[in-house]
Length: 313
Image (tube, rainbow, N blue to C red; front, side, top):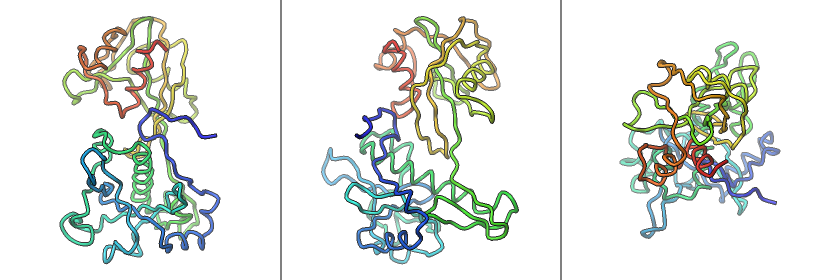
């Protein structure tokens, strides 16, 4: 039985990640050499996106056969295994940041554009399942580009298991792709919710509060701590809503609703420029586009938290 569709952006990844095969180097090599293998090039962590075939069709991910890379293919570039699609074709992602201007010169000229993933998701003209795969690809390659050296001894590391492990050639230490948990929470009190803004945000923009979890914390404890630190709130109860992969660069946003014990707020001006209570009616009208607030885009889990509050959850 398949999971129900998730309204949160970058969820709904449809691939079979074939984790049981990643330790089989021969199997991975055979998948990459297969005529059915498709490889997504990312330049400076921006995926190749193909234009619409017809107006209204939406853009496509630039999956290409290995032969299409031509001289752009290098045996030393990072290539990670993403998984098998529903037709059993192996999908990979590759880093081509060694190229100077791939849209203007070389084998990718005229194919499409290398686009920022955040802007691509906000545009809304690509299937959400494809955006989930792009989030996986960007997050994996970003991690590899940041972890070329061993955190234990400083020596170079090399990729193993299709990109899901790096190992130090000197001390043998193993390193695995990292996801940093972040709590993002909407505090509520009766018919009001607490929204805040950081300096530099667009004028009038308000959103849910967020912060990284710390070692030794539960999700509930992290929510309570962050709301106390940033807004001086005491929390009675925390309800989990959902999670969002957030590959900017490699976080997992854990969305929660938090019941506050009072309306008293004390803003940490280092963390926030402003925090204020907003009525349910103002949240509803602002999400509709005719209210007094600027709200997060639908791609953000903060939007889903506000939607849950608007729906009376």
